[in-house]
Image 1 (cartoon, one colour):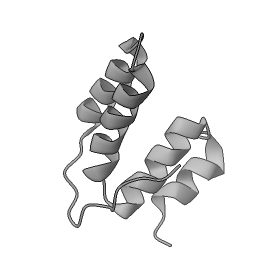
Image 2 (cartoon, rainbow, N blue to C red; image 1 turned 60 degrees about the vertical axis):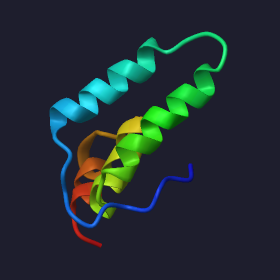
Image 3 (cartoon, rainbow, N blue to C red; image 1 turned 135 degrees about the vertical axis):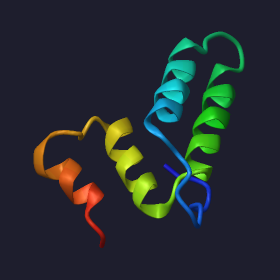
Image 4 (cartoon, rainbow, N blue to C red; image 1 turned 180 degrees about the vertical axis):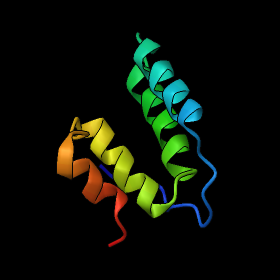
Length: 75
């Protein structure tokens, strides 16, 4: 999944991420794929590189145990 360049400074909070995921879940109908992509691009565009890595784990369903911890640890 290609994502926008990461933000230089952190600005996301848990509520914003949850709201974006809820919005994506509600999108349906003609053009829904493009609208979902726009919401996710906006979210990823506001995320730092570390936050983007963690969001990828969330989207991919790998939020358990050591996988989530590796996403939080600096590279």
